[in-house]
Length: 84
Image 1 (spheres, rainbow, N blue to C red):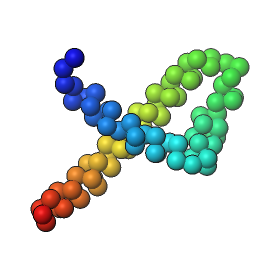
Image 2: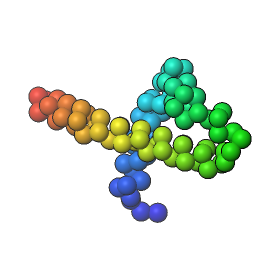
Image 3: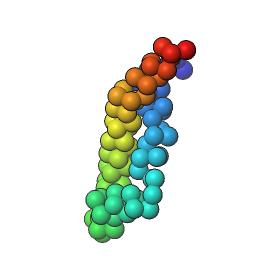
Image 4: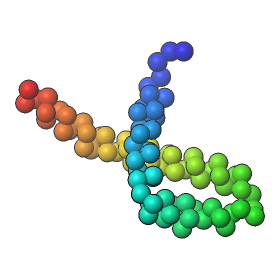
């Protein structure tokens, strides 16, 4: 299997995704109970809700991490590298 920039970009954000959505019990409760209402979808089409909600959370957190990298990490590292 060869190099894939898209796969490596998404994989690099995996730890960021974990930190964003599983940082605290408050965040987990807000996301999974209040916002996505997982218990409320138990009687309906739970499989579609489970897959769609996980993919949406992962995609949004990956986007947040990508923006963080572009706006914070790269400029800071560039500034640090110029001082060395």
